[in-house]
Length: 140
Image (cartoon, rainbow, N blue to C red):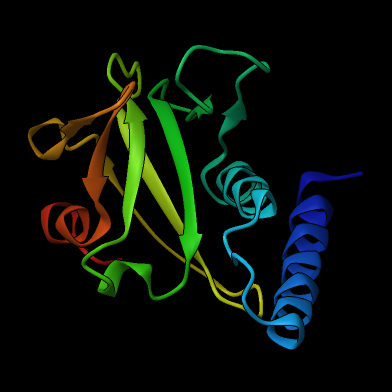
């Protein structure tokens, strides 16, 4: 199956899951499927080569060799001051891509250098508020 077809399938499946969760109510809408949508989007639209499973703290590399960490969040998260992404303390990524997935599967994104100045220690990793990342990188 071509990567573009995988992305379409993941987006459609996500949209169906969101419709189901809306009917069921009271369930977490941040499904693992969103991570797959984010990574597939990066492969299709940025030419990312996916890292091998278990690669240390990166999801892939861009055609120009930059190491990429991909995070996926529900659309609107960049407007919620309490939403954050978690990154490893010893991240190897050069760039951070945050993909925002709408309930219907539509995607918007922001991408830029890992904002190391915004990372706050939390448990085994660092977290950074999405709203702060948007201010630092820009809303694209």
